Length: 400
Image 1 (cartoon, helix red, strand yellow):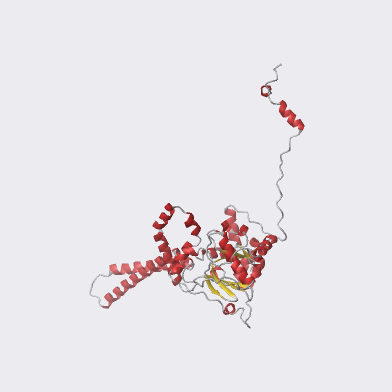
Image 2: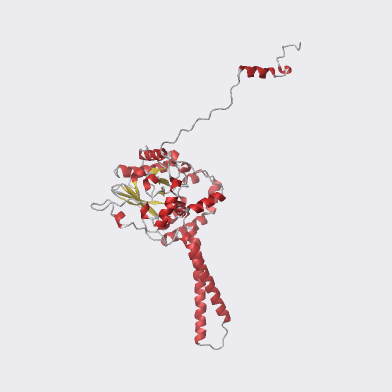
């Protein structure tokens, strides 16, 4: 579930020497050049009202006069597979340690009342299962636990909170995904503001919000995906218009969205698997629909893993200053800056700042390609006609 956010954060703090070594070994892709005018154009597009009915598809956890809190993150529908694999590995480790403990317990009973009975086989089994259990546990803690924490033993959801009183946006993420961040509302851009900013016409992806580096204060952009996966661009537009109107105009006149509980109910684990697929089901053939019926047990397995993942995580909790932000007499949270990170992370972010930097000014207009082919002159045309064989001339001309 947090795999995309983890990869994004790694891209921000990737050591410069390792990245340069990788680019030398592989074909380097050309980096797209961004200009300040591009960011300004996206920000201005995000401020414009959209002639569409605002509607939030959720999940929404809190909404009142000054706060709107939603789920964010991408690939929520894929959650569950890592949990199943992780629980299988944990079960195997626990089984080995249990069998080793049982074998050594039997050996202890034999030693307390030894009467010459053989114990070599029991000793071998105890040492074997102990070695397997401890060895597997070491490998799992060193290499596997980081992937397990994408779905288990972490915050139940990634959250985004919009506070219209402070005009700030707060992101709740684990530390290995960038941590909790405070951002200004006025610097946000959205994939729902204009179709040219939507990826793949918005099909199968949640609404995308982006803060350029000039508004984050951390030398890198902030990218989040909000809500459910969409079936079309219109759903992204409706979601964005709901958020924009809440922050800019207030909740008056907006349809009240259904509130989702943080409690891990079973249906919260099975419904995300079908987010963004309504358009596919409607247009699929009968044969495809029959095939979906046959593979439905796979959806059941993934949904069960998703539910186990929800139960083995805990409800995310905001810091006190963010919980009280916007209340009378309470301080406004400071925007996140580079100094909020550890010194080692600050150094990495400074090294990689050039990757996200924008060029000043406006993007130069693309020049029209002029044809390099010279037009034929009258002399060249007459010469070409002289080169035509006599046989191809008109038939009414006698051969002379």
